[in-house]
Amino acid sequence: MTDQLDTVFAALADPTRRTILSMLLEDDMAVTDVAEPFEMSLAGISKHLAILAGAGLITQEKRGRVKWCKLEPDAMRAASIWMQGFGQFEPVNLDAFERFLEAELRGAPTAPSETARQGD
Image 1 (cartoon, helix red, strand yellow):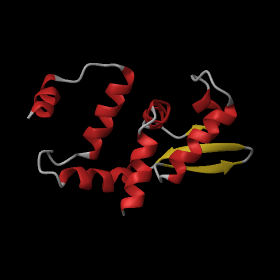
Image 2 (cartoon, one colour):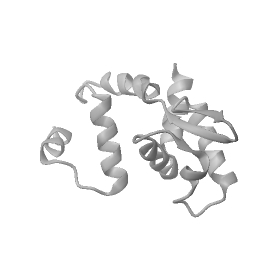
Image 3 (cartoon, one colour):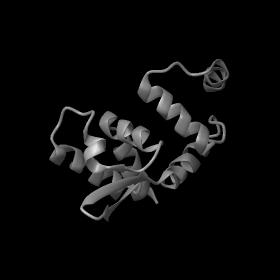
């Protein structure tokens, strides 16, 4: 389990990969659509996607000629459980965690109630 946690946290450590995960919160996306907002090559994005897939955070499948990416939020469950073990963290609601990540990645301020919980 430690190796899997290391892989998930390593994948989440990169801001490009966190942004990709945020994009996939809405719906499955073609690799070319994932690459569009980034100023890097398709090969560079493909490397990021391979790391996310290796961590189990996304899956990829070919539909015709197009490769699609799908978010696998359950892959973060082990990381969530591990963080809860410290006792100083509230139980992590994965839906709320996804909303928090999305807000952070988009630069949106968090709701006051969420901020208050984070300070506890």
